[in-house]
Length: 499
Ligand code: ZN
Image (cartoon, helix red, strand yellow):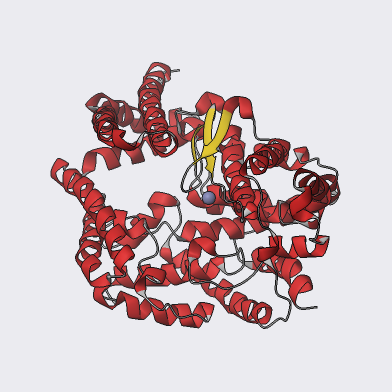
């Protein structure tokens, strides 16, 4: 075919960019897992050289020529090839349309922002953080304008994390969710049933580690193409053939370590399921943050918080920790696993109230970008929303507006992905159950293979071919909505707390 050679050349370029990216991820993983205390300077220098090399590859004029050539006769390409070209164009534009001066300013601001945030949070001093946030907002607006989004800067930021999504779509979804969720949380909070998390104490970290290895391997994570280590904050990085997950251990919080590992395993399974022959291009890459999060949440919540999951794993849990669990009943354990209790801190939130934390942040971001909320008035707006949504008021800004790192790095439009992921996870879950009603019974026997292979065949294999909205509709037959999430939360929590 006319374009075969050009298309092959495109893939050579994309492969080089991809490999440089994987090296960067490996350096970052190592930095968070292994790096000796005083070796940070050398690592920063390595990052900087690598970033420059990657940027040169990303903005290679030859890559631009190849894309222009292919785009001139798009119809001659297969549908798959068109997806690859479209995504490569998107990345190329981001790499080339931002003036070098702007890129330098943004990189500098990113480091300034992080330190200013860390200090402001430690001292609960929002006033010192105001100029940083104002600058970050201005940079986001300028970046959107450079890339042709005009005054739709917030949509640009959302699209960076979740291609195809927009503030208008999210606003409708979150509005519906909020109407139903706030009363459910009130109902649960008013319940006299209170989980006891203090019953799980003194779990040796080594045994926790071996238990979570057993669980995550059973779920299907391939340890020949990945590993799990320890870091301050759990994460999952790497690509298909080399996935690096992390967790953390605390003797008195065995569920934190277990569930964050299962969460990261969900991310890892998605990455391991992306088509290996396409890892360097859009067909082998994740469809966006929301879809990624749907995979982690599905395993963490729909699967691992279920009765059937624990029917299989509870005896093994007790076997691993006989002393620590001997005076804990099955009901107490299951309730501790499904604790719902509003908290001010997002990262400590349970799966029910977590969504309210995201709705809060989305409402704030919308108003910041619309210019109807000034940065200096953020604490007041934040605290009012926390009261309205969570029924709690921060006693200082550290447990309010200063708690998250995201905005210090200009990562606006990122938070909605978490809640979109929850909606999508629940919607996928009911589709799966429709097609294979005995799935929970299989979980009770320790068999998770059907679910993983369904996800591989329906979600993972598509790569970036569809955006989150199109993929949800294609796979579940219905548009993305909060209906399934509310159904799931009610089915899980009403019997536990309100019956
Ligand atoms: Zn996640």
